[in-house]
Image (cartoon, rainbow, N blue to C red; front, side, top):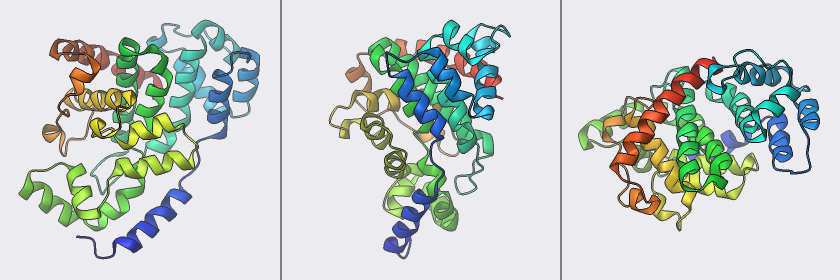
Length: 284
């Protein structure tokens, strides 16, 4: 057990304050996308203030995933041919990729592991939302992208307690999540919800992220159930974390709440694997 939980919480709070903010261009772009009176011209003008994100947006817009294959030559053109919803998705991916491509030695993750899993959960959440509640597609995609951002904050503390974590996981046959709760007294989902507050992320997203491992505790936040299922499917289809994938379980009642069955999960899994393979190719 970590010796000084109070001191650890102080350090974690400081770490949350120090985490880089969500790129302003991404936040402003999301505001424009939510404004029915905004235009492609306004969006293009905004993105062109951040050449690195604009370049990533154009690269992804021209990928096989979106079916355009080199035919888009400007942000304005991308907005017209893709539509605002797809463009918003690309902007979110481009904006958070650099933040999530981090090596996390505490969790035993290489730089691409967190990013690959986050991208998979984002796509899975979007696919599930499109079936269950299309109005949630954009927020579901955003929630999936940042659902594990708490691991960026907790990694140094997990690394400090690495032997304790490993012993607990092996002896108790438990997941990393259970080890966080037992050894640290809180888990990465709780910390991610605090990061969301710093980033001024809407409450519907932060609540879903906080409860994405236990959606039944969320007071029936539909997005929490969607995120939980997407996380589970991503893990079982290979876009997860090898350390405890085989121990991860879908919370009882999740499929009933979403009115899905095992056949639906199989269909979703196949669709997700294909989508992630194409999108990973376009984001590299």
